[in-house]
Length: 165
Image (cartoon, rainbow, N blue to C red; front, side, top):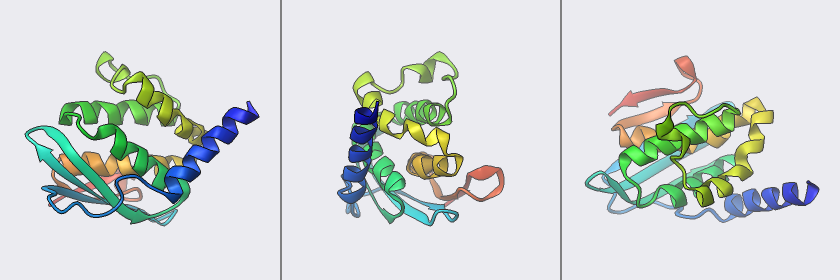
């Protein structure tokens, strides 16, 4: 078990120190800002859509290793997926992080098994409720961008408020 925990820690540190798809996206047609003021995490997610498909995605920001790793992994996983698929993936990821069973059948298998295996490194945050917002910030932010929202914050009413552009 300690070897598995060490592997997970190494993956989080790797993505946290060398995030993938980090930087602005010149041809972005959607953008959203995410803020987790309790932890200090702040990110911006840019999307370039081709119809309803995320053709390209990037993010920029600063935050704890969990937030940066989750953002990095999220960008790798959602690239090339349809808007509906990304939203279902968000729901599935959120249930996993919260330690809940998936809701309906749509989201239950939303994330491909290989991608879910990669995301499982973040599943341990459910033991630390304050870190759940760190792990889900990027996912809430990409969801906001898909819905045409300008910004989200973990500390607005309801825990995650989205504001329209």
